[in-house]
Image 1 (spheres, rainbow, N blue to C red):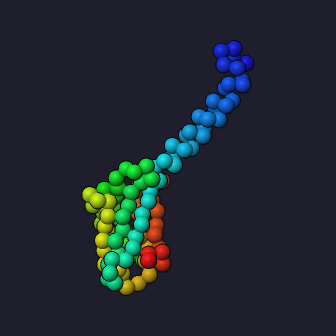
Image 2: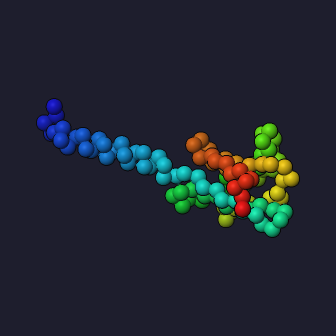
Image 3: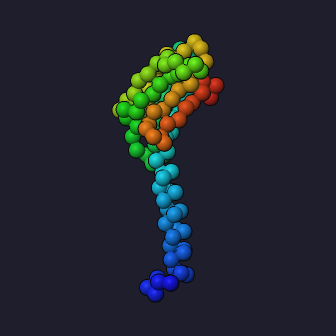
Length: 109
């Protein structure tokens, strides 16, 4: 046993340290909201849960056969607009490892 730091102090500190590590790992989660812009277009706004910008993050509109129907990047306002595909699709936010997500066309209202 360490005389400088008794177990009664070390264990709670270790727990708090682990909890903080998990919290920090999830503090930068991607966010993407897509909604209709009229009948022909979709607009999506992206970002991260900590409020950081998603400018330049790649956006792909994909068919269920994994064919790229459209691709672009979020602009300075972290948004993008594209023509609604005539087939079923999903929108993929490509924010890097652990920072990707998808929005299905059925969830765009």
